[in-house]
Image 1 (cartoon, each protein chain N blue to C red):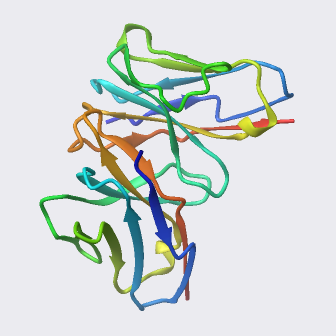
Image 2 (image 1 turned 90 degrees about the vertical axis):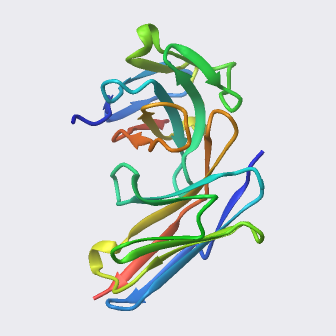
Length: 112
Length: 115
């Protein structure tokens, strides 16, 4: 089955700096890659996603890039703010039922 | 629109007891998912329903876990008997269909503690 790994497991940045979170996946048939943000004690919420026919997607301060050859995708957050502090999960979708396999998550801390 | 609803929000039981969780998906969503999220890990899919039929239950421990989605709307997930390692947050999610283009929307989860 699909295996999704996230690196690093924790990331601390100064407010205003950029943050980059990387994920790798194993199944070359995966075709959809969402990113979810989960604040402490709350539900995961989709923040951005990308499909396998696109190399990059941007939404205000957030962007995602996909490298299908290397089987990795990255989340880029610019001008970080304290409210960006949360756990970020990447996932990959595979198969006819679009099964999502999640990574273990990365804890992002933005220092004021 | 109303989001995915789950109850209860918290449950504490002793090992070998039974427990049931309830989920009401977003109105009109045909696909419903149950995930298990152990502390410090990402959600793991337990079972996926398309309307009232199961399309994936490959990671459901069927000796103790069961789930149903009668009438293709609400769903219940049951654990009988519970083990210590079942302590986790159980998340329900729904999407309009099982197509990858459809976003999965998560409920608030039920935090289960097994003592």
